Image (cartoon, rainbow, N blue to C red; front, side, top):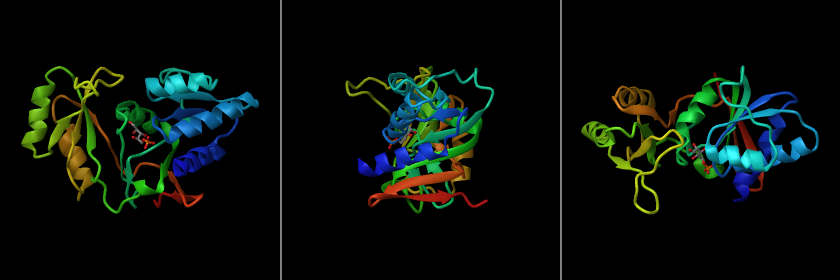
Amino acid sequence: MIEKKQAGEYAVRYIKEGMTIGLGTGSTVAYTIEKIGALVQQGLSIKGVATSVETEKKAAEFGIPLISFNEAEKIDLTIDGADEIDPQFNGIKGGGGALFREKLVALASDQVLWVADHAKLVQRIGNVPLPVEAASFGWMHTGKLLQDLNLKPVLRKTGEGHPYYTDNGNVIFDLNTGPVENPEAMAAEIIQIPGVIEHGLFLRHPDTVITGVNGSVVIRDRQS
Ligand SMILES: O=C[C@H](O)[C@H](O)[C@H](O)COP(=O)(O)O
């Protein structure tokens, strides 16, 4: 999709020589990874920290030197995608199941950049399902606790109908919350449930959002 490509490729302008870059997951940041690979071939010296096995493979394919998250003293910049973004820069992530690693890497980053197509911008998040990563042990019970809170969880499944497992060996519940009036309250409610590892609410999160629209990009910086 052209808008994803525009936003994804534009993001490399924020990269400086010597940086350690958090590499997000998904179809938009895939364009960023490809572009970074081309810059590395031209002599750019950076290190990447991948947020998923999928990204690890893609980065290796394009010749980007990778280090593990533990090896990174600090992360200068993380570039990632998002499923929905509101005007306050609250977002939903995890459509691709990578939310846990994405959140850890982003929180360790000096600067976070989101790249997305224009359709991801919404007035209120919650039109897409909200992914919640939960321990595989006893997932049925964790699902019931989510259901008891009327969060309408649906266990994510593979095409073959088996539970979908994340890179961390956990399951994902997609919550059909509908528009979320109070993201902070919902985040607090979900994270206290035993069995929940992490949720896809990223609140007032990115420093900058780059969206592709009508053949160009729009750059928004978070208002403090
Ligand atoms: O788990 C996946 C990530 O949070 C993605 O960054 C998110 O789903 C956006 O993906 P895409 O760029 O493919 O729309």
